Image 1 (cartoon, one colour):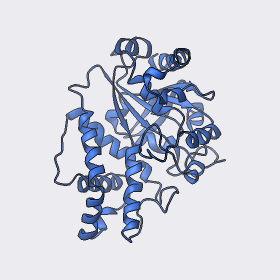
Image 2: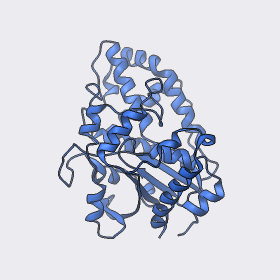
Image 3: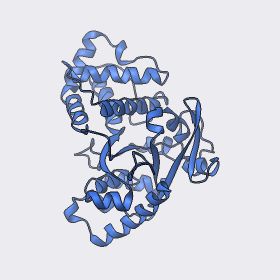
Image 4: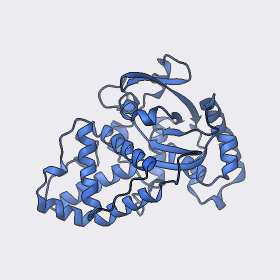
Length: 320
């Protein structure tokens, strides 16, 4: 490897598979151990869940104001599946902002976020939606969501490093398709659609860490982890049941790996070239991660050792 640590890790899996718990572990391990055992540098983190959560918040507030929802009909999948691409375009922008330390100081953080959603959607082929609202409606919507949007923006800025050198950026997302779908997944489903949307700057540095659980286990853990008092939390949010069945009833990682041109990678075309992203698989079908939802002082040493061995096996494969 050019560097001793991975530059970018795409941390992917079905919902509630253990992605956020893995991130929690990596954020609380001694830097030298993280580097020597797992090829991971000081953690930088991006996640598309906050954008998903805010899409639902926008819809809920619009509905409360007496207007139509624009992203979701209800506790169901997107109106337009291309919004899976919208989310990746937002992450691409976050990556460029982080790498270049781009700060924003808008009069309204909510209005800035609305513009970002429309711009990212347009890149995915979707016409503007928030921008079509009247100035009055948009202003009222922004007023209702300003505090949450400002918190998102502040947290984004707080995550900027002085330098990306020696750091590992972990980008988390979950994708899939309907229960019982045949492979390859069609349309905007799965990683065959999502991975090519990542910008070349990310793809050129990325390796994939996949957490393997069955869809049935994903649904069970999704229900188990949900805390209604903390619905926007990475560790305690829940995905609606209809979404679990339609969007996460299966995924296409095993299929993509089986048809890859290069063993140990996922192969796809994007940005005018063919990419081969190395992939390591962490087998979490027997739950090794739920204990990591607790604070580090409560972690069981034996469980930490078992988990560490399984993650090290996957990251060693990624490093080869």
